[in-house]
Length: 225
Ligand SMILES: Nc1ncnc2c1ncn2[C@@H]1O[C@H](COP(=O)(O)OP(=O)(O)O)[C@@H](O)[C@H]1O
Ligand SMILES: [Mg+2]
Image (cartoon, rainbow, N blue to C red; front, top):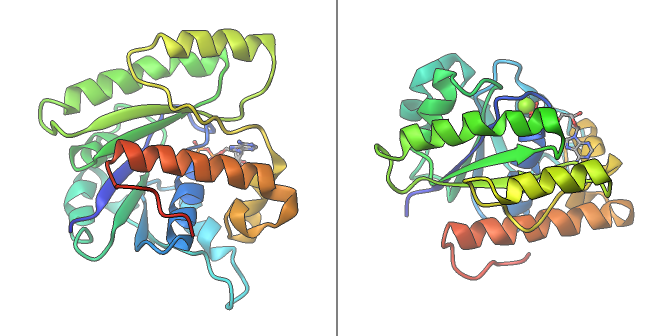
């Protein structure tokens, strides 16, 4: 069966696109799926994350390739991989009107937008909705979801959440907290599930988020590895 394709996008840099992409992709690969991460960001953060795994016995669990040179043709290049993998994750560059995000969404089953619950980040969400709506007439199976990232128990975060709940794109229930464990994964070239007891809460969050996404993608009962 052809791979399910998930594009992680947000016009704001630093909202957690690469973090969500690599944590979800790596965790899914740990569960036994064939997963490819396509780094469509010229900054190459996803590629560097995987390359940070210096221990040959513990490489990053999913394969990561760069297709940033493909630009607006990334959908054509990515399609070449769909028969060889169960899931493709595309890590996009910042910039909602970039042809790269548009191109990636043309072939995606799910557009996932990480949002930090703060005013400046909320303003960026309307661009995402417009982009998704511009692609949906062409790619009718495209779904979109928001995931709250770097969640904190503050009044500001709570009011931002209220705004998001009434936004046109559904919010996933699982939120990712602001946790050092997520930063460490990038430095160590792994996922939070590999980081032991200290990253246990983060690993629980990622597994719950993944289960929710698999339900959205209708990938049957989530297989926990
Ligand atoms: N939930 C989180 N908790 C703590 N740090 C985070 C979290 N999500 C992302 N970060 C950190 O924030 C920075 C930006 O995240 P990144 O995933 O690179 O964003 P983007 O790809 O959208 O630019 C990185 O240093 C990353 O490690
Ligand atoms: Mg990034």
